[in-house]
Image 1 (tube, rainbow over the protein chains, first blue to last red):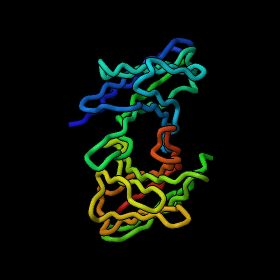
Image 2: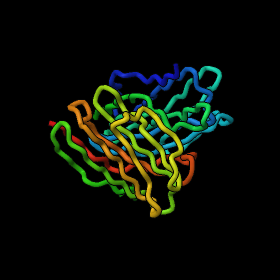
Image 3: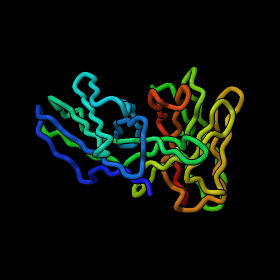
Image 4: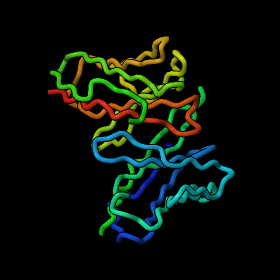
Length: 115
Length: 113
């Protein structure tokens, strides 16, 4: 079966350091992978999309890598700040015989940046 | 404000009842997606509509149904509600198939008592 795995344990990082979050997937052949941020009680916010032919993508302090051989994406936040504390979700589009089946989300990693 | 509007924000209802959740997508977006989020299950994809037509179906119960209207707003109907249906229900929209990301609304928190 298709699975998206993110570290379910909270990740504690000291302010100013780089936070690295991992997303592993099985039985997907994604054309692209997306990362979202979610704050408690609020809707996810789109951060970055990386395509299968892209190794790395950057946006301000964010960097995403995508290794289709390892079936893994890494999400980095450099110079982390307490305001970066949130749950970060990895998402892939699932496909069946009828075509795309909507984005499937991992359960997310809760990131805590400590001052 | 993400541009995706969901109403109501909160809903408390009794078991066995029926409710309707409403979503207005971001201007220009043709696709609408519905997701359910409970504490132990994470975000679960329910259904997608594209320009009025059902495009994809996920783990949507038979007691649940949705539609997208000509003005592109969408409604999610939940009937014969059970305690386990208590969750946050999110609507998201995208231009087409979401290859530029989804925009989510702030959700409707449904509590079934």
